[in-house]
Image 1 (cartoon, one colour):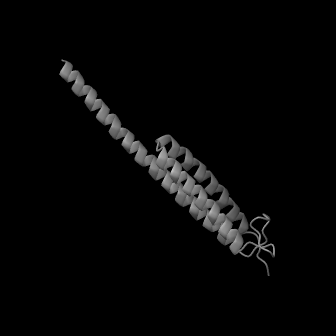
Image 2: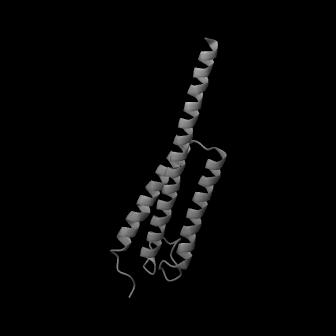
Image 3: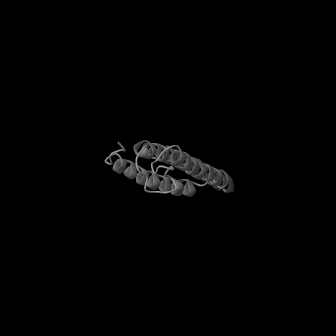
Length: 126
């Protein structure tokens, strides 16, 4: 009887470990897709802002328009964010952390995409 109980307990642990591995892989994929969405939205924002008047003085060039300087700052910030996320998740991998960071990334991507949509309605410099 004890051997049967031990066998059932071992089987339950194995199933739970496999379930956690699937959840972990799904959450990692969710995070990866969110990083891709963030990169695409940021690229759209850069493209839609190029050569137009920039309200953010940090991103504006010397003539007040968005250009190389602003693009490099935006890319540097995004690269830093993704790098920090990677280091944190590599050190403390958990499905909950991957999901939380994925939600944050999708939220930021939505913000950049809405800014890009607005920028496409703004006429460029003549």
